Image (cartoon, rainbow, N blue to C red):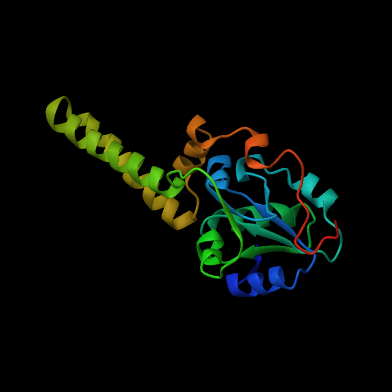
Length: 192
């Protein structure tokens, strides 16, 4: 399924013109707490209720979707499009690209990115499999092979089961009130 994308620069121009839109951040609560664009709303990908977003979205009002780099945003846009959101738009490059456009970003407690957590976990499992294979039982080499096969699959499919699992870990979660998800926030162009 093809999804609409917009560059971070074009999104920044729409934001500065105070156009009316919804901005949904699909990262983990901990990532959102560390840094997010002002007026964005947290709806983590693993808990995204596409039907509810579809019911809340107004026709002709774009729903911009943000994550760290754009990969999770694409998955969220596909879910939203399948649920009937006609104007689901991925912000290409995610928050990393938007940081270069001088958009207002609210910063909180710094955390380790999900991507780094995946690399650390995968590397640790490969190393552990190799060490145990040499020191305990050669069958442990299968652990390293399994992780390698998972990384190849993640690269081909552009999905990561380990990342989805790590996103659910307690250190990547925060209470909804702590990260501003208790109530939807107004879009930059909304009248208050």
